[in-house]
Amino acid sequence: MDAYDAMDAYEKMIIVMRSGCLFLIDRDGAVIIEGMITPGVMDQLVGDLEPWIKRSPFGEAGFSGNRTRRTSALFAKSRHMTEFVLHPLFLGTAERLLCVEFPMMAGERQTMVRPTVQVSVTQAIEISPGQAAQDLHRDDGMYHVRHPGPHVLLQTLLAGTDFTASNGATMVIPGSHKWDMDRRPQPHEAVPAEMKRGSGLMYVGSVYHGGGANISNECRLAIALSFTQGYHRQEENQYLVVPRDMVKQYPKRVQQLLGYEMSPPFCGWVEMNEPSIVLESDDFAIAKAFSPYEHE
Image 1 (cartoon, rainbow, N blue to C red):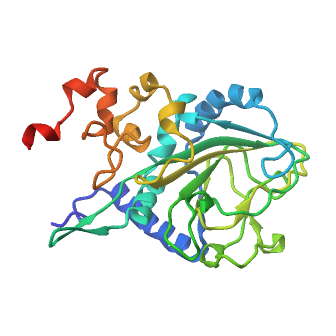
Image 2 (cartoon, one colour; image 1 turned 180 degrees about the vertical axis):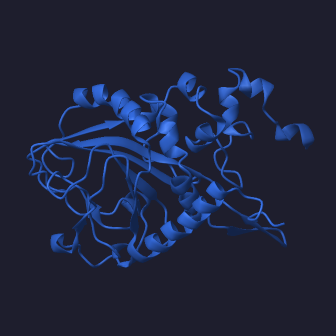
Image 3 (tube, rainbow, N blue to C red; image 1 turned 90 degrees about the horizontal axis):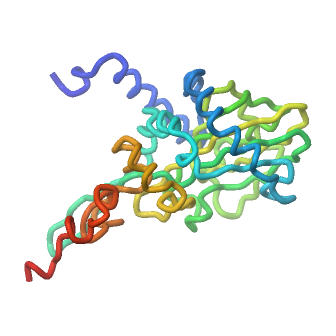
């Protein structure tokens, strides 16, 4: 019996669905996952974030939006981000897409290393009535990627409200992740990612997209979370925005995704050890450190 045969029906379903997501992302650059998060969890997550969103100021005219509120550091504001970040389709697709093996030479011996994934940014984005459409853009520009090139970001916009063509649903240009650096996105090429509350728009950082114009009388809420490789700097510094005492309350896998894991071969170590040692003891430098000088 092989590993697949030993899986239960749910695990097999996730593998099939993940393959479908990878196919559609390769073709279109984006895919909508319907019913990604259950209504009960959505109620709790949005309930945790709403007070913070209401306290957030509108942005400036232009890219950030003068009728748009943005709230960050979501892992410091809701424990229910756990269900989002550990969603098997989202996380599994990120691991397949971003964790590409890389050959590393040590003397005459070649070793294949595979990076980890980590959270890059979290943000709740509420588009209010009267907000104009955002400029179409790519999210991976911060990593200075030239196109076409390797994938460095996978992001999901979780619908905190229904997304409609009139309330500011994110506009996406399917296939634009395959464009070069010179082709300019045009508004008429974009289509609205209409979806129900609790569904998610998953897309790569190279696809052109932007918040739509809100010509309705209701707000549109998105909860954004992105993954990048563990050897990149996070767009939002999770070590600073999520207090260490709160990080300790999360499951081990969430801690790792927040950056408390070394990305092979050696990226992110603390005292030549896993960075998670800072969560275990205030005296980690003495109690856990491995000193190379002891073995010279």
